[in-house]
Image (cartoon, rainbow, N blue to C red):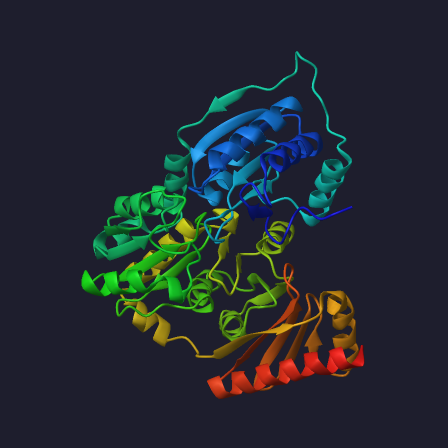
Length: 452
C-alpha cells in the first residue's frame, strides 16, 4: 500500500500530483472513516481551491456526510469552527507555504486538530482499497454555507488578550498576508484592537504575485522595507494558510522563529509554576533557557505540527511551539494559529511598553547552521540505523532522527520525508561553533554511509 499523507496533509502539483480524482476518493475515504455527520470545509487563495472543494464536497456527500462551507479562511479558522459547528471532521484545501503550482488537502477530526498518524493510515487503507461507504439515495448529505466563521474567530482571539492595553498603545503594524487568507483575518483583528494597520499583499491571488508564500527572510524584503518607510512598530508575515506568523522589528530586522516563540513562551509559562511546554526536538537552547527560567518542563515530540497538537491534547500542557515560528496556545485552541500569535506579540509590546528590538535584546543569543547531505534513496532507511550504532555511547535523543547533545551546542540529523537527502541542523553560542558542529554532523553521515 502506498502513502498519501505527508508530514502535513496531502500535497501535490495541481492536476499532476494532486488531481480531482484523488480529491474525490480521499473525501470518500474521509467520509467512510470519520462520518456520517457534518464536515466543515474551507480553502486558501490557491488555484484549484474551488475545483478541489467541489470534488471533496461530492465525495463527502456520497458517503452520507453533510458539508458546511465556511468560505475562504485560514486553516486555524476552520479548525476553530469544527467543534463549534458540531462537525465530525474538517477538510481544508491548502498547500500552506508551498509554491503556487501546488495545492493540498488537510483533514481534521471533530476537535479541529489534524487527524493522528493512525487515522491517516486508516483513511489511506480505505482510499487504496476503494472500500468507500455509499449512502442510499435517501441518505445523501446536504450542503450549507456558514458566513460568521471569521468574525467569531476574531472575537475569540480578542477575548484572550488585554484589549485595553493594546488600544492605549496605538501601534503601527504592517501585515503581509501573502496574497492569501491571512489577509481576511489579521488586518481586521488588529484594527479592531486599535492598531494602525498597513496591508501588504492583501488581495487574494493564487499566483502569489507579491512573494513566495513561505515567510522566510529571503521572501520578506518588501515587508522589512515597508516597516521602515512607514515607521511602523512591527511587521507581521503569514504563510499561505496563515497558521504561522513571522515578525519584523521596527528597524526592518526579521526575527527567526525561535525568537518569536521564546518571547511568547516566556510570558505564558511564567503565569503558572510547573508549566509544560510541548515542542519538537528541532527546537534549540533558547527555548530550553526560557523554560528553565519560567520553572517549566519541556515535553519533546517528533518534528511536525500534528505531533505537537496531539501531545498538547493528551497532556493538557500550557503551550506548544516550533522553531519555524508556529505557536500553539491551548486556551484558544491547541493548533498553530498565525492570527493568535500576532495578537499575543502585539499584547506583549503594548503591556510592557517596549519595542520589539528591546524585547529581542533580552533573549539569550544562539547561532544555527543548516546543511543538506545527498544520500542514495536505497540507503536512506538503513543509514539511520548505522548512525544510531555509531553514536551509541553519546548523549543523544532518538525520538525523531538523531539529536546529539554537547556542552557547547547540539546537532540534529534527520532524513527528509520527500527527498533523497539527510538534513543536518546545528546550534551553538557562536556562528563558528555552529558551523563546526554542522561539519561534524556531515562527517558522521559520511562515516555511517561508508559503514553500510
